[in-house]
Amino acid sequence: MVGVIRMTAVSCLPRIVVGSLLLLAVVLAAPVAAADDSAALWRGLVSGEYVALMRHASAPGTGDPADFKLEDCATQRNLSDAGRAEARAIGERFREHGIASATILSSQWCRCLDTARLLGLGRVAAVPALNSFFGERADGAAQTAAIVQRLREPAAGARVLVTHQINITALTDVFPASGEIIVVKPGDDAVRVVGRLDPPRVDHR
Image (cartoon, rainbow, N blue to C red; front, side, top):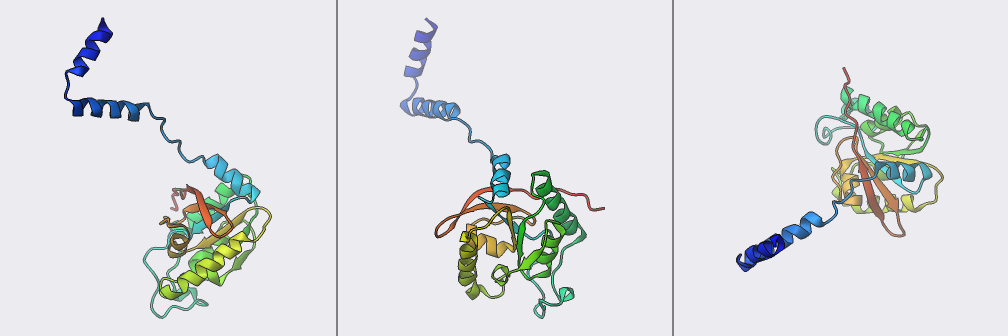
């Protein structure tokens, strides 16, 4: 009887309302999308199936002074104390997930090199293709293609590429936060984003 009463009540409602109720029922019944499985991302990084694209840690400001020089860190925008603490904490996170050493490639900018070295995961190799093209947008396509090619090369173990927001966005369409890791899987002609690992929150005092 209760069921009959409910059906009768619904049948008396305007059609548009009934449709809305049915749509709401479908939405509520649909499974909620699972959050990124960070454990799976870390397993992929450990195995080398995935690659970590990391934006340098916190460095206040935007771009660099007009007269900056790559060989002179004093002329560049550099990591803050918080940024240095972030880089160390990120390195510790790698070790907690079974990555004590990795192939580390970095932009030649000091804030990237410092981030890469403070990870404490091994020797850092400077790669010009990872350099910021913020001031030379015409170089972006060639540098992005070079990184795609580098990612496609066979490699054993974990790989971390430390670079700039503009480079990561050109490669993945993702705008990363400082210190954020975009986890990608190299493909035949591109890279696929499989997840994101947020930067740690640190107290640098």
